[in-house]
Length: 466
Image 1: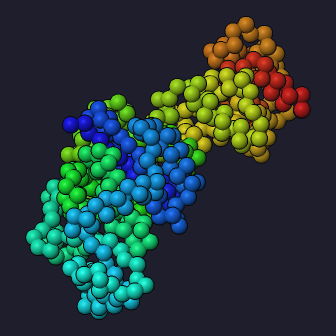
Image 2 (image 1 turned 45 degrees about the vertical axis):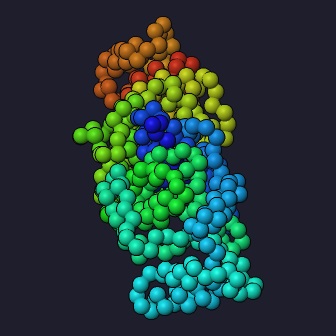
Image 3 (image 1 turned 180 degrees about the vertical axis):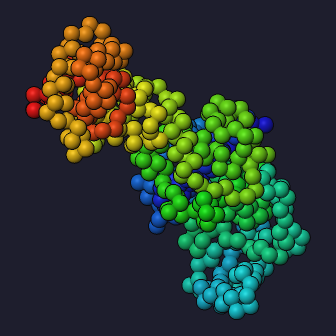
């Protein structure tokens, strides 16, 4: 059997962090089994579905690297197929037309509320002759659900779960206007797409019982279910925006790497021993449903920051320079030049260990792209004597044939020795002159990364301003 999974978001908003994790688990399970991972956009809620949300979902999945197989399926486009299945069930006597007026349904609802029980349709049109139908009431089509016994599913995460059929009613397949309901569309689509494993949040667990009954009524194989516990905040409360429940695009904008977010989402509810840093290749090799926990996972931005910092340190310097250049282009309102990208690449060695996000990295890397305004603290260091000394250092550096960190370091130390001063008396003004601040990567490493022309231009400009 070829494993086929699917991710089926509704385009009514952004791709939130819980949805991204569901997509990841489906993708990993399919890739682990060398199967197929499909994408379906469940856009049957026409009032709330938007093209912008669908595009954001597709972009978010692409950024995360969760590539899907085949064409994207749009559920609304299959409405005719959904209706066809409902009418087939009607012809087989496994469904019926219900002519309940809105007032009757409201009466059932009020009675259920007064009796403290959930609202369930009472089946009053289940066996009635359609000839008795009131005029002017368009019917819905309901499935004839089993009245006795129980419906059980063996869930790959939750174990065996059973519900008495008396607790379930005859669900609507087609509304009075002929449009299919979500519950019906999902079953038809999953069958037609050949889905073998339905992996989704455990807020859909109750839906699985009704959907199982519909599969059986249609004479179709029931897929295996795996309902994953939801994600909570670090404080154990339901995940909200204050915990970090943002769209995937927000994490991209904040400077998280897709491989870091994938790794973090993987560890939200799934484990492989004590491993925390897990590459995509390892995740595909190791992933299974048996190690998905039954308890709610806790989202912690501090842990995500730590993991993202790890992936930044492990990233290729040139790749990071390109990412940083794209961010600085937006911030500065101009293109970052090829020469500046080379500077950024050389400077990554000193910048990477200090950054937890690409945003932070870009902010710190700005010193390589243009001369920052001198801060008050830096100005206090650049006294007249310090500026004069920087001019003499510029003369020495200008004579270097080897523009390397070690050569710049040696030239600076030679000046320190010649003038009988401490290294800090030269290094601190040098940092202030090159960056406009008092904090930076190693000053000689930074001078080398700037390159001869830019470094000497900055030093000369500061020295001349005394």
